[in-house]
Image (cartoon, rainbow, N blue to C red; front, side, top):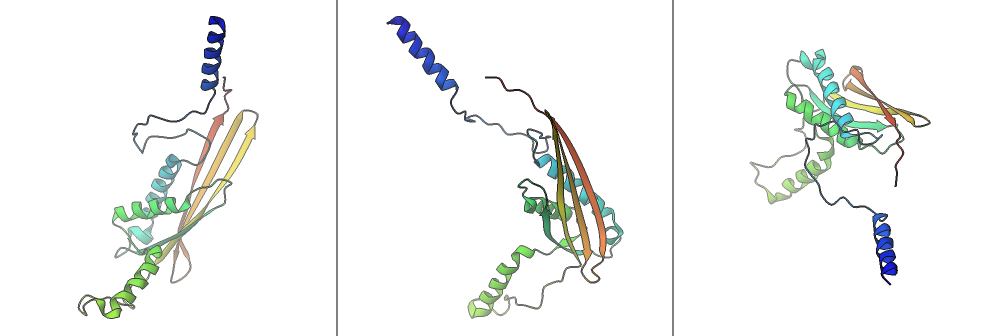
Length: 197
C-alpha cells in the first residue's frame, strides 16, 4: 500500500511539473534597457531606430535652418517584413521625439474626422459665436514623413541572422521632392540552444 501511494504521489508530481507554466510574478524594468529575448522586432530596435532617424532629420537644413518650425504630417510606414510589426507605434514615437525637439510642428492626420465632427457640432448653434471654430482656418503641412521597413532572415543549422532596414522620407508637399531621406540598419544574431526536460 505504501509503495502504491508513493508511486501515485510521484506520478502526480511528475504530471504537474509537465503542465503549462504561467508567469505569476512580475517586476518593473527600465524601458530603455536592451531587450533581445527573442529573434523578433523589439522595443529596443524601435528606440534605436527612432533616435537615430530623428537626429538625422533634425540636422538636415530643411529643419535645422528653417525660419520657423516646419509643419509636418507623419503618415504610413509600410511593413515589408514577414513579422507583424506595429508600424503605427514607430511613427507615433517619431512624431513624439520630433515634437520634443521644438524644431517642428505637427498636423494630426488621424484627428481630421474628429475635427470635422466638432465643426459640425459648433456650427449647430450649441456653442457661442465668439468661441465656435469652422473650416478654412487650418494650417497646411509643409512636409510628409513616411517610409518602409524591410527584413532579411537567414537561418543555417542552429544559427540565425535577422537583418532590418528602415527607410524614412520627408517629402516637400509643394514640390513633391524628397527633402530628406535616411535609413537605419539593424542586424541581430541568434543561436538555438537545446532545451532539456
